[in-house]
Length: 173
Image (cartoon, rainbow, N blue to C red; front, side):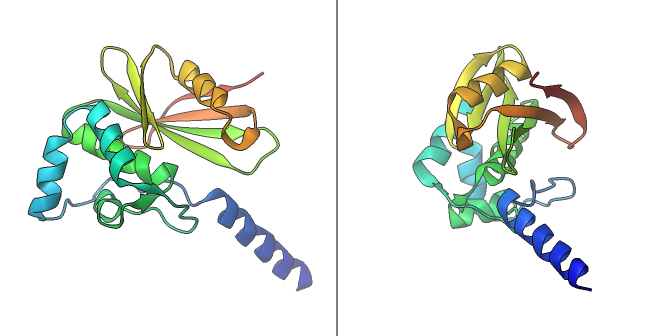
């Protein structure tokens, strides 16, 4: 019995530290809120989405849930996976092809998410910051690592399309 309780506690701590993933947009119904719809209508290109998030959203870890885009827009507080959900949904709404990259780090339980958009090349938002002109997903991951997130080296990445199907994986040898 003690082993079961210990495993439950360890599992709970791991969930607390790594977050619960990303909100699944399949089946999500956009609310009928005129102010929200007007705001989303103005965010017609990925750079505007990043600029909007930078000016209006504050980073706040959400370890036990991932809010839908409307909830993030209302609360203005979220972490990397919350902002990825918001930004990929808005870009998809405007007709952009989008992906999400989940990055794992060596010797760490932490992971990170990046939103990717197809413009001339790939452009991205890392949390609220917009960057452009990447030609591979791996180069995006390597660029992210230069920002010294978690002071760790990436070990693995998974690229998901808008429907959360895996389209690429990579390892850092």
